[in-house]
Length: 162
Image (cartoon, rainbow, N blue to C red; front, side, top):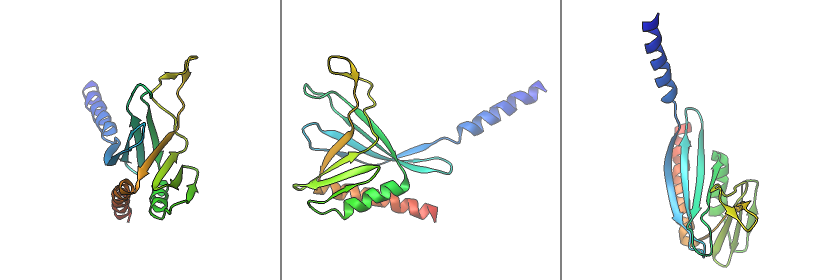
């Protein structure tokens, strides 16, 4: 009985660990703001579920503290994000539950809702936790690169689903 218990335990452990989550990078963009950020888009796939991650970080300077953000988007939310960026015109705003897009003066400001800084650092004199939302600006050439990479990833996902 003891001889059978050890191989059985090893088999169960290996099968549980082999059902992990794989994460692959789709694209990354550096913003050209005063407080520049690096934005990463990842595709996260598990056995039956695929989602998309948006990770961002900015660099520390004498004016800004280093922050990190992470947000999860479903396939439909990312598809909506790509469609709205593609159809965007100057002076037009779009707002939904996941994000907000403002297009003014040849730059696009994107605000991702339900994100807070995850660096766990303190701000101000009373040691309050940082709760800055993810906001970043992109130029038209950066948006075209972002759209191309995200559309390619969404098309690959559609081919896998069908």
